[in-house]
Image (cartoon, rainbow, N blue to C red; front, side, top):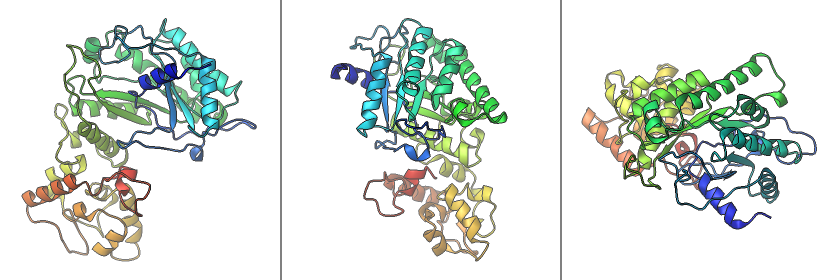
Length: 420
């Protein structure tokens, strides 16, 4: 029987890993099974800072042989320890699913015994869920560095998503804060997973036989080491380009453990938020890191990255809404990706004005400084006035308000989509 104390320890220990998002799988369900990992089968719940909590997020064990300075579960940390068996994890997952507490499982573990033993136990859990318990639901498995390649590929065929967390942005920081890990131990399995997904796609492997149908993710801790936002985003850009990652997650360093090698204060959520905004621009808006941030500098705190770029490039504005190409519309602050495509469709039939843009839910408090509509301009005069107006929008947060159950239609739409 699973006791509440072990459950509390292992779920609390798992909360610092943010590289889980329960979406994107197209795994085929088996008849008579429990759960559903298809697009409509995952219900999302979000905390106020945007983290997904729809999964049972738990460690197999927090008894770690490694001594990473930033980790609350490091070997020399004075914390309660606990361990679960694969059978206990399976029973807990199925029972929670049947009670409608969860829609899937995020399973990770500290490294106990050795990497192969830990990974073997995680794989055994996935095999039991898929085989004995006939569980069709979403499974995200955290990979273990240095574990046998065969174990990694066995896991990839069973679960929907895997993640190998890079944790720190440079080899130098890994040597200082996590000397038992190397960059190669984290990058190599990510490369293997990427090659497996490319092979399955090119050879049209049946969906039920594909490796990690929802792709892979990773996490970086922000502020535990001295790397700039520019360096972090350069690594992010390379991971998206070379590894085909679905997401890179950023976790602001929180000083839950003390070490002379770590800063006394956390990085703060604002820096994490700015990195997520820049990440969105890299993936969906056609920006490059060099446009957003110098390699040795940080993102501006006063404005979101798109506003900061626009202020540095005022010579490119204003643009005429009725003639500007899509690539330029995407770079206008206040016009998100969906808004840009709406504009492109609508202007085929009529010339647009500011009232039309308002109905399209374009954030005119920002956009009006950078656009004209049918030759008319309603923005502020001069760079200083524009900066002051944008800063006022940033402080009020009127276009990034957290959605609630009772939000009116359109309210806080940018919080839902990430549009800038």
